[in-house]
Amino acid sequence: MLTDDFQTALDADGLIVPGVGAYAACMEGLRAVKGDRIIGRRLAGGRPVLGICVGMQILFARGVEHGVETEGCDEWPGTVSRLEAPVVPHMGWNTVSVPDGSALFAGVEDDRFYFVHSYAARSWDLVTNDRTSAPLVTWAEHGGDRFVAAVENGPLSATQFHPEKSGDAGARLLHNWIQSL
Image (cartoon, rainbow, N blue to C red; front, side, top):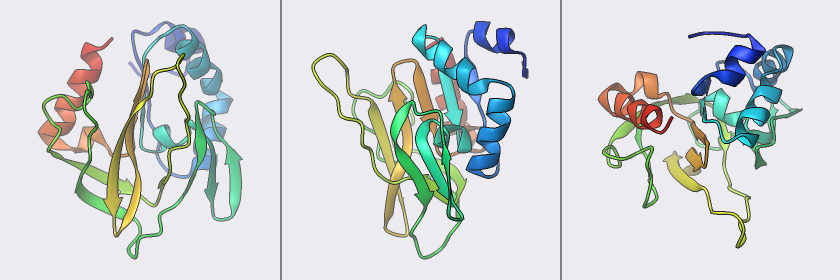
């Protein structure tokens, strides 16, 4: 179901946050429908959220595009910035480096996924302690530039790539996420 209704999105079994275009425009649209509050409330209640592409990027604290810094949802620390690879955008199929124990990538750990982006989180700054479990961070590389390709963090998961454009591997990943609902 596609909705911009606050209560419907809050009550859904799972929430997918897609994103197309620029970080600032995505955040503006999300805030216009109180999407940032929906995400925060869902996560506070342990309700699953999946961010895809820019929908993943806006989960970080901030994004910088064309010299403009925009505050994100701040679910994870860090800044989304332009890739430093020789060829940008990163467009096409790529492998990912999946950590042990990933439920999201079960059965597709060695597959390729479809990426279309010029910006990404290029570092992971979240420090864990005895009270918090470490998120599972999946990495990818484009033109020698390493970036976060996916994160599994309790009820919050996200992919920089497009699972819906990634053939059987993407379908399996989405199936895995749906099974977690």
